[in-house]
Amino acid sequence: MLTLPLYYSKKQTMIQLLTGKIILVTGASRGIGRSIALEMARNGASVAFTYLSSQEKAMALQNELTAMGVKAKAYQSDAANFEQTQALVSAVLADFGQLDVVVNNAGITRDGLLLRMSEAHWQEVLNTNLTSCFNLAKACTPSMLKAKSGSIINIASVVGIKGNAGQANYAASKAGIIGFSKSLALELGSRNIRCNVVAPGFIETEMTESLDAKVIAEWSKSIPLKRAGKPEEVAKACVFLASDMSSYITGQVLQVCGGILT
Ligand code: NAP
Image (cartoon, rainbow, N blue to C red; front, side):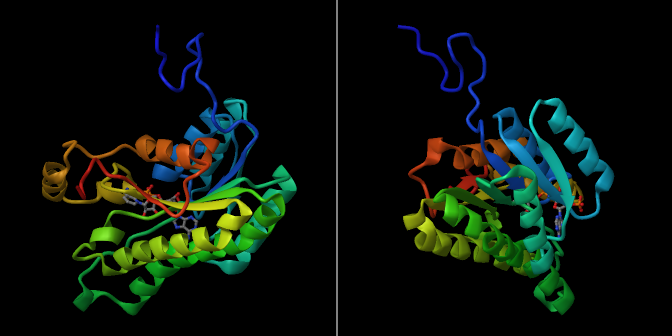
């Protein structure tokens, strides 16, 4: 008997995993967030997404998503700001009618050894990477509780599991995301709201392109798959956690890292 790949029907057309779902992705003007928005749309979802300052890139993505035949809208919103996040979710609910999946992707680095790390750089990273997850969870859970359904996906990093010299602020924020997400999974599971973490390894984006070539070569050597990851490879893991394919999965950390922590 002919066995077909999981995502393809007999006519070899892609089966869309997210038809009818409304997704909100933060920080989607570039990098991994942009890929998440595109991959969600490819799977039939309507996509609301945010950016901080890259308005042109955000508008280009909005047009690209719309051209794919899904409803899409860009919102300028600072993920670190509680009030802006409340206003964002109200606007998305008004524009789209419901919110099935949120992906906390917005993140920054302000690297430096502890001795040289300023309090401002500590605070900035914690606010943008970790407090943002609190802000969005607070804003989106009331409507998810009413709907008795939802999937919250928080983007951490393997650095939050292993630590990294020169990234104490970033590693702390990403480790915090894991504890926060596991707690939400425990609190919200009985209401059919799932909360999972995706922990990428070394992924080729603007965040990593400023790294020294030697550092990149060293990292690549230690990755079992012997290469950096692509944003779309992280995005595909998010599609899985957003979809009903993962309906019995909550409180988990899915490492998308080429096996680097193995
Ligand atoms: P990136 O290329 O630097 O893109 C960051 C995105 O976040 C941009 O769209 C940016 O918007 C947005 N953003 C930054 N601060 C924001 C704020 N306060 N409010 C709203 N949006 C904000 O980063 P990336 O590499 O795609 O990383 C995405 C996520 O994956 C981050 O959480 C990062 O920590 C995580 N991650 C990345 C890697 C990697 O190797 N790249 C590895 C592990 C984890 P603007 O363009 O408007 O500034």
